[in-house]
Image 1 (tube, rainbow, N blue to C red):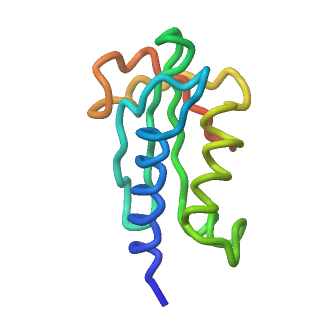
Image 2 (tube, one colour):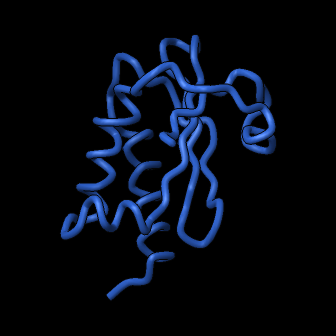
Length: 114
């Protein structure tokens, strides 16, 4: 059995692969990806021909519960379809959170749910 850290690495790699290979009329590019802690990561991406920048963090413990029994490829596909290619809501701004990830920290709209 793999550790949460290994699954987190695998999922992050799968999502990076999708950004590089998936065709989308909405998503432009992955701007940043980072491991936040041992089992969480953040992505920042541009959409709408650069009009918007979205960011979101995911925690592996939550994803393991929500997608129990699915492969990391399936989880990445579900995240791509449900959260990246079709973001839910306008997001909130938090420039401090974006520091170190992108140059235009005031442009990132965070999509995390409370």
